[in-house]
Image 1 (cartoon, rainbow, N blue to C red):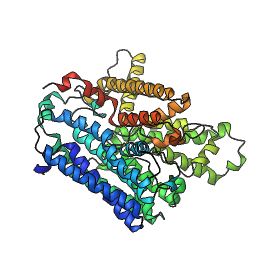
Image 2 (image 1 turned 135 degrees about the vertical axis):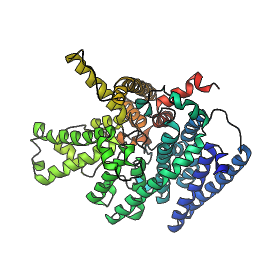
Image 3 (image 1 turned 30 degrees about the vertical axis):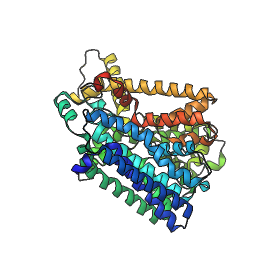
Image 4 (image 1 turned 180 degrees about the vertical axis):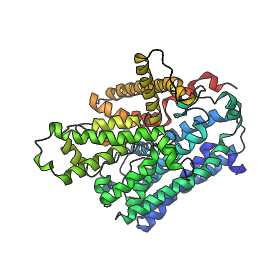
Length: 505
């Protein structure tokens, strides 16, 4: 472990990425796909040797500001590592450009799930497996670094419940945060989180197989669900063979992206009681219950003319399709239920996908694989607004519920509002940049929301007509790739890197 600590964070991630390339090699050999196997084997061997050489050259290099270096390393991993991961993809596909391969790997590593290949049959099964593996590793990378790197620096949503400034630890911990090597925290938390992450993925894979799914598709979907990447080798739930039982299983495991309390204590006794008190989990449940009911009740307000939908079976299918899709987009996964079309016919709405865009912007829990604004920030804004309304009725009232509740209503709501404004400004800048590439207003809005919230499949359902990524120009692809990285790392972390005080001794 000490020898591993002497390597840079980027070098370690490069080595893991090179080793992961050998998994599609074994899968391609089993399918006798020799060309794909050679592409991944040669790439894996090349980059593994390159990683070893870099590790030898940079071994035991002294560092001064470890927290800053690891925050920079996170940005480098999300933006530069796909250059390496795209090489075997480019060599295996053979009829696409390297830019397209880079876009696919950025989309997978940031758990966005946007793809330039809407026809799953164009890619070999081993290439689909590589996309799912990269998405799974990217989800775990965000999960681990959020707790080991962002949490001590009050970034990634932790700033809502912390009295310290953004990018700095609490005053009594600030010196410890800067002196403690984040690499030690990474190894310590990795030993705690990796077994949980792998166990949940394996359990969902086994359950999906028992539900009637093929082992290959079940593995890809299990990795996509736990990482909230929405990557599928069969085009989503519509091409899956697990049926409604498979959707129910995925629905249950998507709940882990609503709150870190679902896994923070290793799934020990007392998890249920903690979830009952968790603010993010309750906000998520409210959305899962309220939005499907509103869409369901909309039928009796304006859809009487759909006579074939007025039966009990269609009503249940429409309600389930709505509940599954709402949770999927709330966690920024992007899977749509096989019964989502039933809900669209039932509700009578022309573009219910706009509701899904709002859910994707809301996002899941802090320190989970979900993207978006995060439920905790939405909760802080809600509590602040509720308190302001109370003061209109009772100007001399005193808000209670303890010191933590007052912190969330005041400083927490303030920084949550700042983040929301930064999110809106980022979306406006991305929309303007996309408009300069020739896209219209609707396409720019949908693509900006999809990239910033890391919900790539949103482009296919939010607009009146599906938006295909393969029809975009090179400039638009590069803009979206940068936006995915920004949405995954979050604007506050980028601003923390720009703070001059952050770079001083």
